[in-house]
Length: 279
Picture 1 (cartoon, rainbow, N blue to C red):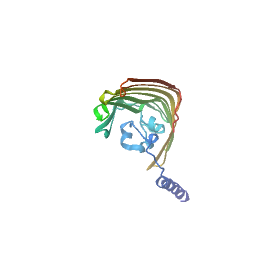
Picture 2: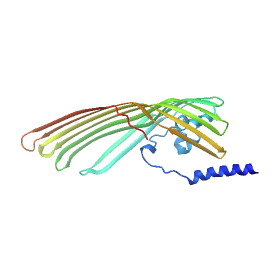
Picture 3: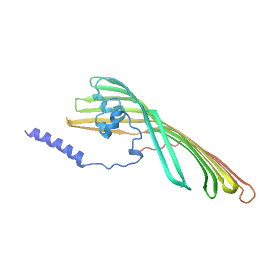
Picture 4: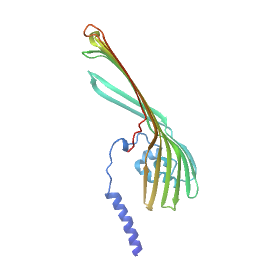
């Protein structure tokens, strides 16, 4: 009887901690999923970390694949990510519009299950952002005759690597994923501005390219103290091994307001191998 009460009190204490000790969440870049991987996780939200019993568990919680039922070969369909940003009357009476659209296959996984062990290899695209903008304004301001702006940017992150998990009975499992992380970023921006009364014009061009290579280990745990509760936890940290950035900027200005043409041309190139730090 005493052991039964002790066990009941232990389970009740865990429930109290889960319910009454919430953690503060922040809506920032470090706490945001740009693209959801797999259809089950997309409908279950964060609770899928406590299940993760198919190949997508390699990404969410590798400990969950220890309880996968049999072998599997799976892949999700193309993910459509679309966004539109509009600032009303940002330039004179004209709206400023920028659109982003990406259609990418964002997951593929192979899972092999043994008695107490499971192994998996997965390919994931957790971030894919493709942005494009072309705007032409005629006489947007009294001092501007024509304004043209063009922007194209792509920012895609790829993860690929193996996973392994081991279960200790039906209540506890550990898992590990080691991802190779690759990020490709490019941005091209150009604008042309012609002054009213043919007083001059400006031409600006900017190009940025970035490549990052690194590793992202992910450690996962699943624990089920009783049949109605499963707790899942993961810890991961991205570490960059290489980073290469190149930025080019050119600016050309012609001023005829004084009657004598005045020319100004600037060009600059920046290279960097500085590695950004992850939270």
